[in-house]
Length: 346
Ligand code: CUA
Image (cartoon, rainbow, N blue to C red; front, side):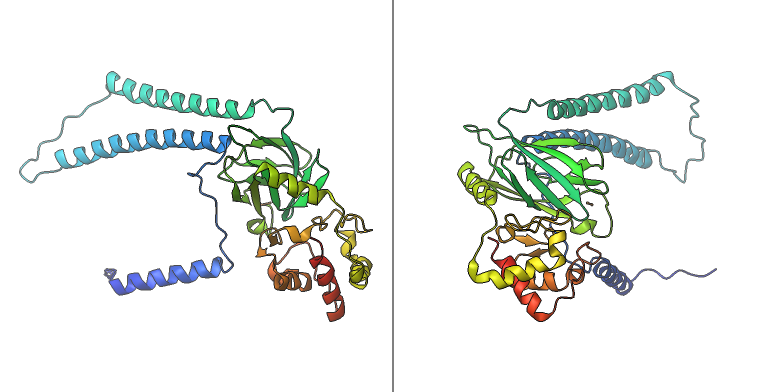
């Protein structure tokens, strides 16, 4: 019989090295941070957090009891060399069987009721008439945000006002999809809700803290699913009003950029992108009217810097392989002009 060598520190280290190599090979790209689910900053997330603490506590208690009894039994009734008697054979006990049937049923019942209470409290929330209404449309692989009552359209970065005790502000999201199923998930604000073609789902958030909250698409939706990132930017009511007022305006116009502008408008970019106040009115890709007000490009894949914008326009497939924006094969002059014009869209 072959003798299996004992794992030595060296072979363990090798195994660890192999694991690290594999992880690097699989996740060669940047690993995007995920919001902390234990740091809830809105009512729906808070309710999910409290429920998960209850479930974790109940499961921990069950684990301690089961593992404790198991350990006790293994130690107390282990085989002893001086004792060859057969242990007592028990064939069924009504009391024990009743106990291990009734107790789990009660535990499951409690967890079901607690879950149902959270679900109902979130779903049946009365949406105030003055709530901010946003339609969220999932696309492969970016997010479209349409502010119905404000006439604002943007992408990938959802701006909402902060909700305080003095001035509660609730944002109601209608979730739709342009292609396949996606899922809207910002862990610190709410649970996941799917965006399904030919169906409208909804959810609401009332963020209590200003700042940027990171989210991801949480439903596998194709090649760039992992790079379908989203940001919720929570602002003071004044900052939000300022942002909305700027977004409502037509794209900025500067006569000194006429050459760059007409170059952009002569290219097929305009059949997929909208720039308000120009003939560019495509809706297949993100609205670019105020591109420079966004902090990232490619749905959160890279920061919106001048170098990155140029690299993105030149060769989006190198940055987000498989994305639906083709490499436009622009010559150097066209590339310069397109980037110059896009950079002016404040
Ligand atoms: Cu969209 Cu995954």
